[in-house]
Image (cartoon, rainbow, N blue to C red; front, side, top):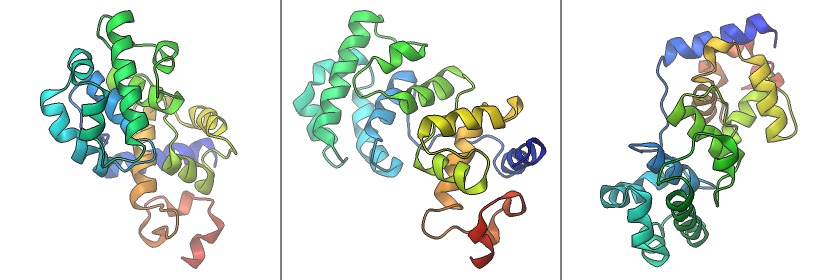
Length: 211
């Protein structure tokens, strides 16, 4: 995809959805961080069902540590890998209290040093909570980038770096949201909805004509 096509690609997604938002429910950087950690290998809908009641009373690192691993695990048991995630959330909450004054740090190294937090989670927090122009590459973003030809890569890091290079600066604030939502609802893995895709003519997907 050429730079001009990439700009048009994002421009159309922006017209369709000017202010894309994360579908994970949260109220501040801390609840966002916890929600993203819980969302690994789980759906946003499933996470929201568990965190809705949880965040109503437990929405700070101190409250989470006070809740404890066992009761947290019970509260999120409908989410996959809930025991490991409960352990990580309690551990990261304790670290936030001990090393960061109870606040979510605004730097990648500190974020990635937290239990259960990898590059993707750090990128989500940096982008949504702090307005950093990062692109979090999940399975949807990875698929859209490769399938359309926007940024081709074999690894998540390759795709992330490719997207940062291919995405015009004016679209970086919302780029990963547009790509994730496009992959979730239009450019789906098994049955991409090519006939109704607003960027179909810009897309390099060879199979689009047969859909």
